[in-house]
Image 1 (cartoon, one colour):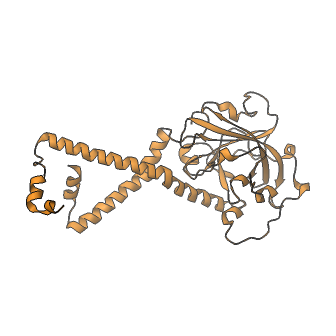
Image 2 (cartoon, rainbow over the protein chains, first blue to last red):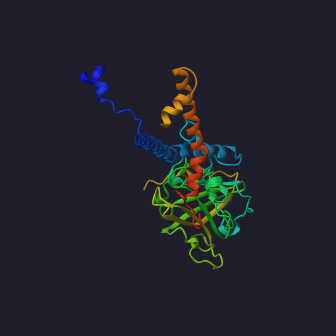
Image 3 (cartoon, one colour):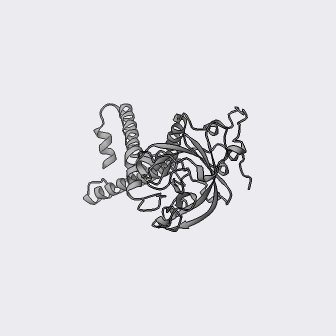
Length: 265
Length: 54
């Protein structure tokens, strides 16, 4: 240590002047590798942390801007514990009478999504389209164009990231049969119950057919389909969850009681 | 090579260069985060979750 501090030691330990061509090439390669390493590191930071920060902010803002959306989950735990009225039994209406809205323009946020299993504070917007850059990476949950709308006889199919970009479907693998999937539109609440799940290849588009896994069949029930990536942090396969509509109710008569019951196991 | 060249290309005394360099790096990171990385992620299909060609 001390010897290195001496002027003689440093000058003698210093490398020969980098005058040779080989030296300069080596220095350039070294610097390029340092830059490449920094870029890769920055990419990881961006993908794993920054996309969450950015997308969560956007999605929260989108939900708050929907003046009809139930946003109590956003403020849950902030002290305001006023009792929410729940939808009375006589207003829980059968699937066959469910109102079906027209499919909106690409990029329009038309519904909100609540999953008690994912926490009492879980609320995410649902927007039209499954384009990565404009919908899924920013707005969160996307609706597959030309699949059913909420409440429709057929298949209401939605997709979202399981990791990063606000990860709306982060805990999709925790869903169990009977769990509630609640959709709110400007007009109505739709309460679906999970029936099954599967892990498929990305090419298996029959999972979002009007009758899941039976393309071409006439719609026979009011299905919901959630797709996300599998395994986590990969795009190799897709995790798919199906559910069926249990009841619907016009908005304005309280909230579905399912929203207040976070399943324990 | 690159690093000394950038340093020498910046004007002013040391502390001015240090500030300029920090600003340049911040601008580079911002461009990467807002434009380059989103494009890379979508173009190379990293983290896709839809069925179909997505």
